[in-house]
Amino acid sequence: VEERLDRLNKALREATKLNDDTHAHWENRCEGAFSSFRVTVVHLRREQEALDSVEDKAGAWRFIVKFCRARPFLHDRCNEVLRILMKSDLWMKAFADDPELTL
Image 1 (cartoon, rainbow, N blue to C red):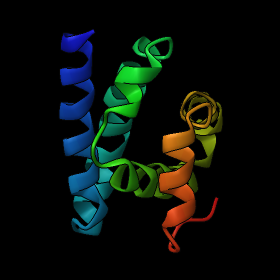
Image 2 (image 1 turned 90 degrees about the horizontal axis):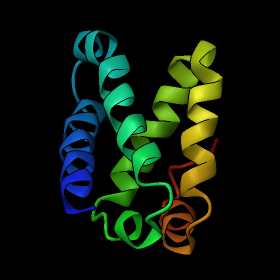
Image 3 (image 1 turned 180 degrees about the vertical axis):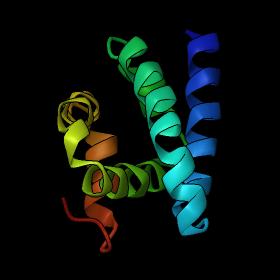
Image 4 (image 1 turned 120 degrees about the vertical axis):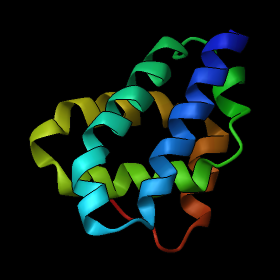
């Protein structure tokens, strides 16, 4: 679980860096970043405690929302990640507490 959590945090750092990056960097890197993030979330889907321990939930939510809007053709994969994260009260609180976020 620790190794998978490390991979998730690494994928999340790469993804959240793109939130404020240039449009060109976002366009070139967002799908790869989402893919890495998605795989690690799916691998930890039964490890709620590990998912809850992620620090930058707000940054993750901002990335997911931006990605879902930018890539509607990847809707099913976005929904897969959303369904996993929405099972967590801590993840939902982080989403609700950020006034910039709406899906």
